[in-house]
Length: 296
Image (tube, rainbow, N blue to C red; front, side, top):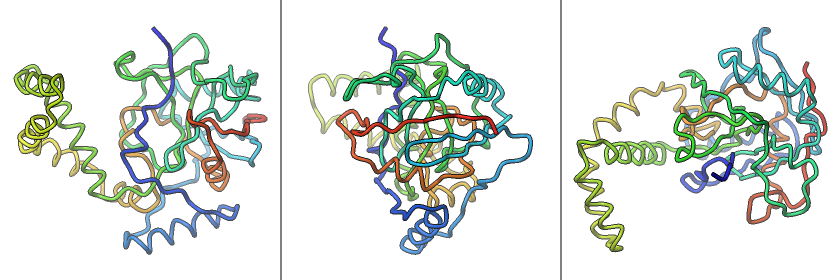
């Protein structure tokens, strides 16, 4: 089975918004506040500091320095990351996948010696890390999370041994977010054994290319899935909704990919990296490396 640690291509689900910064943490904040004024959403920023018991790592990149803090609530991921930093595993790796308004991804050791336009995203150590989903850790802008194989090859959602991404995200409005929840709820509804008739109806319509029949089935399912949709939406804290709506992030990845840390300094570097010119595989046309990763 072909191995891949690429994130699912969810960027198209939400609108693309890339901060226009001048090159400082202050400018990133001002950009977010200006976005907030345009959308009339109360500005809510996540805590970008780290308690003293969090290990911090300095990533020296070609575009500037990023400081990340590792959360002890995800001990397996944190211990593995510290181990790899001590081994200098990340020194010289590329940011091999960059999507504006979504995330920047790195950690593939093959990228250290990659030729221009060489496909990347397959490399890593010969092990995976069990998922560590924590209810209070979200994919806000600046979240540090582990890449992984897709669900079809990895139903337990185990993480890559080395590849990780940092969320750049985009402001998410309520309608878009509810739409994402609705899609997931409908998918789960169809997958239940007691709803096999619905699955058969939709699959038959797909096989013959009858889009009208597909749309009709989905519209009939929506009221049946509404209790689940409402339950999920109401379970999300208001503060979390406000952070996603004003500061930004990728909420559709929550509880699907393990968040194990966050950026404490260098947000303007994230914005510089996410806005570079890329090829069709989302690899930057000019290499951007982690020159050195150091424990602080």
